[in-house]
Length: 491
Image (cartoon, rainbow, N blue to C red; front, side, top):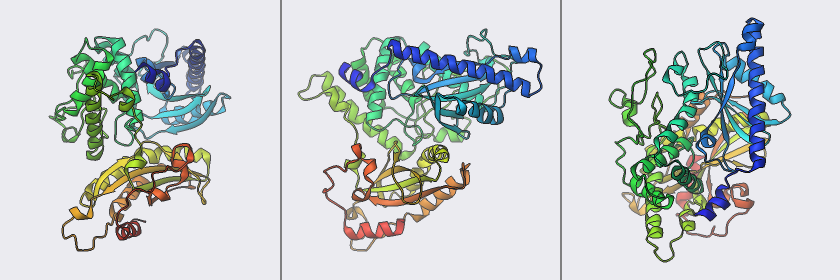
């Protein structure tokens, strides 16, 4: 396991990296304070008030949990006084300040997300910059802790969501009995989830906070077990978990501030909460389901992988011949599993527009999966690919392709086998297109989306590792007439 951690996760704790990280945090802190000062003056506040307004940045996410690696981005929470506006001041003024900075590039503002943020590279480090506005006139060094629920009073929903990325990480660390065992186990779980293509809240799988909560729960249940045993327990427990029961690290409590009325997860009062398929509940008020995007399809994918993990981990820990950790961490290959794909292309003529447009399309692929779930008579299985692929396109300068692999029900399993069946998926695809184009705050008129069917042989070379098509393209195909009919009805 140590070899896997060293070669794959590569935690960066060197003096050089710490120097760069401190430089990033110091630079961003200064930029935030200067921006808040100038924003106060813009809003006609006195120079004295503007000078005291302050502004602060806090580390969050994997860096806060102590499990940061080369493939991780850094979550940084920007906390500002009440007079700073998200839409105009943060997404316009501060965005332009960052855009003009010589060490910042690849900026895109994501306004409509559950947690609105600015994504960028700063000193070559990928950063998600979150925004929270508190009710105070100033944010200074005396604001040491964001733990107290009363700090949420007067905050809008988006600010509460942003603050809770930090607050949840702090609480998770405080709720595990052995922090080092938790961190080590979470590192391995994150590697495993990424190699098995399960690490994505956007497409309806699980994101970082969900994996952290699940790992913390296992550490609570088995406080004296070492990481290799905790790995086995993780898979064994969650492949059998009764998912009507939520995964909780602590009791859901009412806030300690009487003025706080924000709703939190409560299946007794909310029908929507009752219908959620994998309740993995965050510990900080307001408690929410971190896995609310999970669908029937993605739940099946996760449970299948948990069963696989449990089987292999049991063999490893019982010293079964041939069982190795490398077998557990074997990379999942979508292209070995499926012959048919829906190809969703996010298209743009401008690289600037494309940064925002591809992120929006990526976040909505799960809606297409949900629409396709209604056609289970024809489709035996669906698996979305969490990654996007940069591919060339003859009509647009920028194209990012997202894929969903399909496995059709075998014609032998269909009723009346001698009859001809045509698989027509135009209805769910059109519904998805209507949804996404209706929701989209398109960055420009020169953006578009294209959905087509592709067999494995017709996928662009850019989606394969090293840009080379694999050698297993000669495997058994479906009946040619079924392929032809389906392709015709889909495109």
